[in-house]
Image 1 (tube, rainbow, N blue to C red):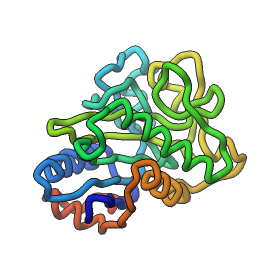
Image 2: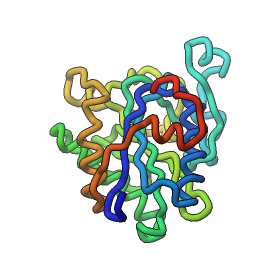
Image 3: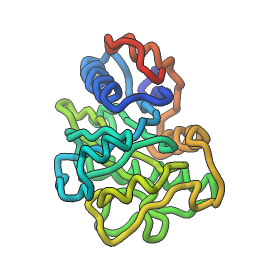
Length: 236
């Protein structure tokens, strides 16, 4: 891929641990120049992740109870607090070398927000930012969470989670992102009809290309898995 493009792929539904391992391998490959900038898109089975800035007391029920409901729980190395990933949610993991994007983490976070704001606008949903908070909001309800890690060599991992058709009841068991004062929403809730999460792929990829000024180039998911030296992903 040329310097003015980025690769993207959709991996389908992938367990969190497998996606975490894949990210680590792709970060190393990006650092070595074996791959260009990438946007990896997928959906997770139910999982709660607690970031570096997270507080365990933002989980409102016992961990064993969550696991009995079919949800995994992980402490992870991204910024931010507790969040939920699950069916109906579009998760994006940009693996970017920020050397080519200004080495500006604050600008990068704002750009990720802008990508999602534009993608939601494609569905007629007016989303925006909320002063003092990271993420994307529809009025006082959070529709997308953002939590990133900046690895050595200015390589990014982790990313964003856009609630498309997410069952919002999963958020009742936590204080999402440690924010007590506001609720959560989804694209389906805002539109009043069920929107498959895959429907958001095109608008997100297009907005990513526009905001970052690069041409999207679809790549074969298996090629990334092979490059990372991992067995076939469960959701691939």
